[in-house]
Length: 225
Image (cartoon, rainbow, N blue to C red; front, side, top):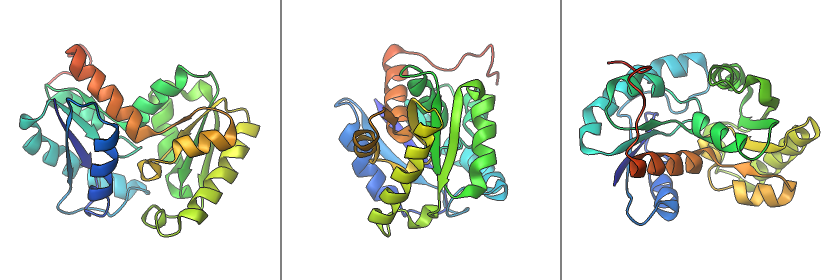
């Protein structure tokens, strides 16, 4: 099983750490390959970032995916995921859709905690498009830019814990990390909060593995070529 993890940014900043993370949690039969864009925004926060990255993601995926059994677009906004489902004959999974599906099995009221406030409206729109709007109890963000998440891990974890506690106070029964740059922090945060916390990157990985193992991919009744 060969799985492509595509970072939809014009930087290799996270390629090595993602390779280590996904390889650690992947099933023994899964071969993990990491790629990023040759050019494009360094992170996806604004609508312009999203608009600039989307065609580059689609082009890169179409160029590479003939050699893979499944594709994960590694950004919580799921850029290009719906388009690629219409163009590829392999399963395509995004972290937002996967993590919300997993979270919905664990509780009814969901909280999402992301990074930087500029992307909140895009995330809310994606959540509503996926049909989880009526289950969204809280949508919050930490005041740490994506590119600085690993610069001071103590600061990042402190802000994440603070905003996640507020999400729980606002009614969230399950917390979803709203940025794949927060990968690896879910287990720690769950222990601090006392509620399930879903890591979107790992939820997407396991969802993709499952689809490949079951021989399933997106329906052509919805995603036509």
